[in-house]
Image 1 (cartoon, protein in one colour):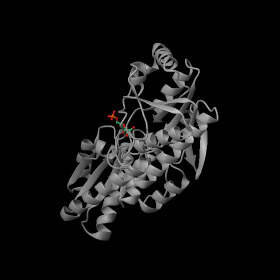
Image 2 (image 1 turned 90 degrees about the vertical axis):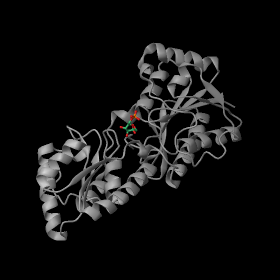
Image 3 (image 1 turned 180 degrees about the horizontal axis):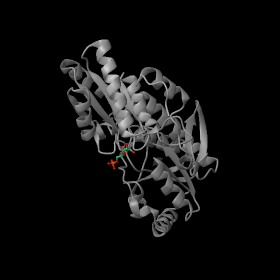
Length: 333
Ligand code: F6P
């Protein structure tokens, strides 16, 4: 039997608790010891940990956030931190560490691997879905649902006033959440990093599209989904520019951290549980320096470095669907 540790790091995502639960249950069933470090890599540096067992993870599968807490640990990039973490893990006689998080957390895991002889396994957990090598990250499906139900609500008021609404979604620098929320929410237009040209062209295009929309449907509501960190001067400036160009009322809505919370949808619970169980299996098989994930229905193992060295693309199907359903533009750059 092994001594295994788990931590959650970076932006929390709905389903992280479901994943911790699965790891604990799988470890207990196989006779491994399992501990959890608190506050991401900070807990590893400060020896802040607790023993986990199935009683402690009872009734958490439906809870958002993470019972282990999370953090972005900037100092973990340093050699001294990597060494200290390695010493702390050795002191506790840990054989393997599971890191649930996004690409920053995986970089931390690889950094640790330079100083530590134990096994490091990453599980993709972020609402952004921006990790190469997997179809979906834990939390992504729930965040889409949250964004979509917000768009539905926004449309009610947008319709009532026949206004244009700009809805800003998260995603850091990736458009997965924006694309999916726009499609499922039947938005009229979407602004994504993957398809972004320049502000002037986008403004011109929206102006044209709104004019066409008004001709066809009368002066109706119009919903634009915008990915965060993309519009150079921010969402308010975009709203103002659109008011001038469309001669209508434009209201900006930033969904923000609401998208990180809430009870995970079943897809995220199932993904989180599958990955938690598979991580323990990979540890038993002696694996190291890999992300355990699912791609095209199968469990896959991807070298941690690869998860950020390649850029995950939106994919042809999603892009084609957006071409057809949104923006009414037929020649993407
Ligand atoms: O990575 C998850 C995420 O929610 C991104 O979508 C967003 O850009 C970022 O984290 C926000 O980070 P913070 O919670 O540190 O403000």
